[in-house]
Length: 271
Image 1 (cartoon, rainbow, N blue to C red):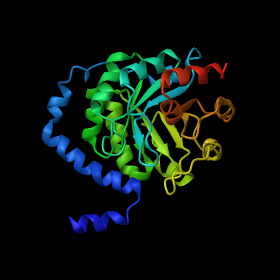
Image 2 (cartoon, rainbow, N blue to C red):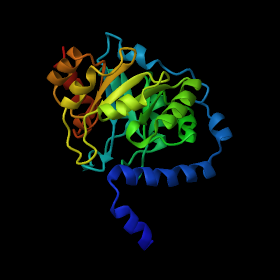
Image 3 (tube, rainbow, N blue to C red):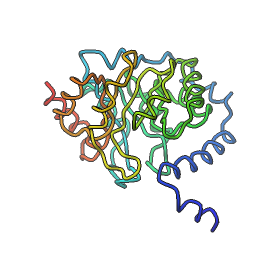
């Protein structure tokens, strides 16, 4: 135990999450087999097209996130219910939903994703730290339409492997990058969208300038998503002019007592 504590001291939060995730996935495999996942009532469903909903002019381009806590901010909102919040997001014009399923660091659960799927008819992103093919199959069994692959924790070969499996299951793939190096080494044909995370992983500071810097480097065949640091409708208007199609917003809505109302008021200012 002392050795493990010592080894963790030198790790940043992302390293700690990935280390924990490896243990979590191993336990999940022991608990539920792939055959059992494939027998899920949701596994065979036709997934929604991320592109179709994101580019629908009747919607906002916003990917609205259900997020109870974060490692940097602590508790954001542990009172709101996933079904009430996500259906309110959808009614407010969300193009897609993002549901955290990491429990130890974000207080998310796989049941949250399942409940959100049952309650909504728009695409849902499983927001988690995907490191194993098992999680991709699991995402499909829980009702996800989109998986997130984070370039900072995966090799190009791992990204290709996980994205290829996702596409074979009918899932959409969102690749998250933080800088140009991650973007250039991670692009492959099985991706649907590139998400630029405006959060600095070293110090958790956020700057939307990251999206502007990377916009011109994202190939035209991919949807462009800006993530984090979006709290003003004017920011979305500027990002749209820079070529972005989607805008992942979580904390800005979730920190309010009524996240759905917060989104409605935000969207009203976009028009």
